[in-house]
Structure formats: C-alpha cells, structure tokens
Length: 115
Image 1 (spheres, one colour):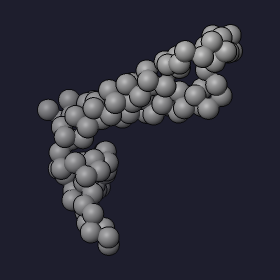
Image 2 (cartoon, rainbow, N blue to C red):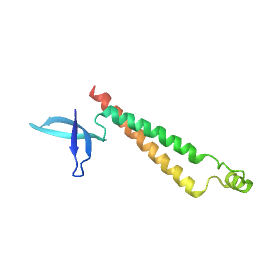
Image 3 (cartoon, helix red, strand yellow):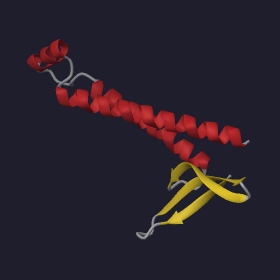
Image 4 (cartoon, rainbow, N blue to C red):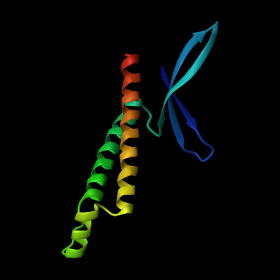
C-alpha cells in the first residue's frame, strides 16, 4: 500500500491511498481511499475527526432555542419546534456527520487491515 500524489492543472495536490497486487501475471492498482490534500491516511483521519466535532458543535448551535426575550418568538419555537430553515440545516448537518463518521470508520478499517 502506498500514497499516490497527483497535481491537478490548477496546481492543487491530491493524495490517494493505493494498493498494488498481481492478477494474472499483471500488476493491478486499486485506489482504496481518497485522502484529499492530506499526505497520509492518519492526517486525513485526524481531519475527519475534527470535522465531526465541528459539525456537532454547529448542530448544537443551530438546535439551541433563540436567545431572545420576545415572548411570542419563544412561544412559537416551543409549540412548533424550530423553523423550517433550521430543521433543514440540522438535517444537512446530520447527513454530513454520518458521512464523515462512515468515511473515518472505512479509513480506520483500511489502515488496520494493512498492518
């Protein structure tokens, strides 16, 4: 297993975790994971963990009741729950958190199987 480094036309560098194996007398390479701008799988994993934490903090901030003394706003929030745009943002954050956690779990599995 090795990290393949590719530079795009725009000059950004992307990294891929690649596995080489021999099949039918020929060498075949398979991309196991996209690492993005992170040069190692461990760096990508640390970034994914940080992203999950950040998204959770954002979700808590969006889910909090409005910080206002306006009784009408507080009553509307308590009766109807959060407004539609807040529910949409929470759904989006939930999907992002689940994706990042699944990606981190998959990358951990690849790293463990390689050792």
